[in-house]
Length: 554
Image: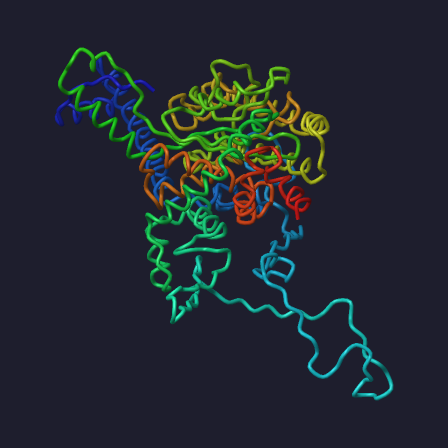
């Protein structure tokens, strides 16, 4: 809505206007004044609503958002589905009919109960305890007639203890000296270590705590010191850097294989690198002096971490890039090493231009969750309209959930969505157009902006209805980026670009392991122990195939 025309009125003039209107003796110009007053009220109302939405977004950024589920957005919602809602959808834009009182609703039992069976403790040491009085084949001490035999499944008792993340062992090495010649004979320590030594497990644990769990150097230093095992922050960095020197070819190979993916998810988040921030400050100081050289410079000052998630068949690869490049530019670096014979991949991201590639052809898809969030933000002000959009999308997500449960291939999934989701999306598209064309919504309001966003990007938002394998949203990439966000939140910054590269390396390897359900600690240890073989053929040391190579060598 345009800003109302500014008209100056005194209190006496307003009172006179009201008196004329009440008596039905309006004058020329009264209509323009009343219209301006009405427009001002509408304008201020929209401004307040927009401000409230902005404040809510700010609060979400500061304190996080627990959920955007429908039953949390609409407090009177009776749906208990994790994403999505009622089985019936009227498509009229009206709230769904209330369920009859005699309809019995069966709620699904929540998954998990906080208890883990013994099979979940894959990293635990296992010890078999023999019976203290009986052995296999002994006579029964109770009935004295039968014999006792071992059961197929033994009983299980789990004892959980604790130790420092890094534990130290001190070897007191015996020394003997000849009393005649003075020669000193020293016992050899295990593995011939000398002085202080950090093994592969120690380096892997430091990297995992730092780049996988977001534990900053200084916190780890305090924890270790309090447990009697000193571990200075500088030492932690030295050990992580040393480990990276042993395994970095795997990171390059991971990029090479990720470049061949059929689907790319990508997104950015801001990051702090002190080295680049210092460059920004220096450039700003030079520009303040007003030299011709600095006036003409328009260098990028932003610093970002890009998360890229590549999917190829059953493989999921996570990559992180930190620096001045945007996500689209980092995607370009992958396309340059992609097999030119492969068909263009599907690229899933939000609608920002900086997320797209300018040099290579891709099949663009936009995130449906981003479009949905526009309605979530204004649901309190426009409950009926937003409920219709959110519940329609919920049905689409429910359909997609069925394709995952039945493990459909891309072509089967596409056909299933065209059968069940396409009618819903076509009806939603008609509804969105009707809101704008029939002027049922103010275009500049929060709801109007959400509607226009969906209409402007409709073809990319519905790519899953036309391209096999195209995802609905970019959630999996946003989840990956939380690794970098956790690091930024706890450690605050990287000191140098080299330090950022080390962080990207370990985050990429660790999160790829999580995606592939591989133990990242064992993987990092194995890479360090087999560094010579790794340098010769890094493709054999990916998270999904390294165990076969280790088994063959052992």
